[in-house]
Length: 85
Ligand code: FES
Image (tube, rainbow, N blue to C red; front, side, top):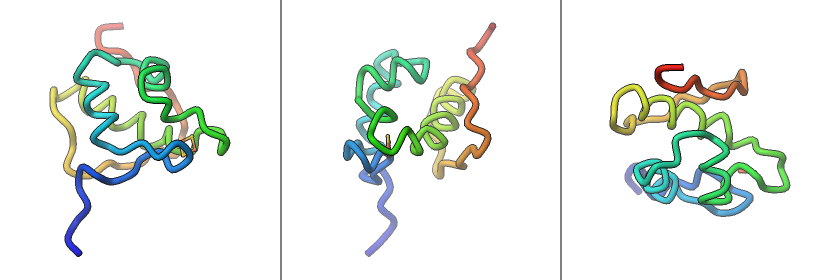
């Protein structure tokens, strides 16, 4: 088995893949709340443990305009800053 890459499941509660999340972000979900609304990731019964992956993924995209090879989890649980605010 090679690296899982895009089919990696980010939100285990709701079975949301990285691919689904990246697509939502590309389509304009540029805050965590918009990602929650669009994909239902981050709002499962665990209370949102996957947010520490969603945050950095979103932040990286807003900064670089592309997605990182590997998501570095953010253990602080902060909402990423919006570009230009
Ligand atoms: S893993 Fe995403 S809300 Fe639980």
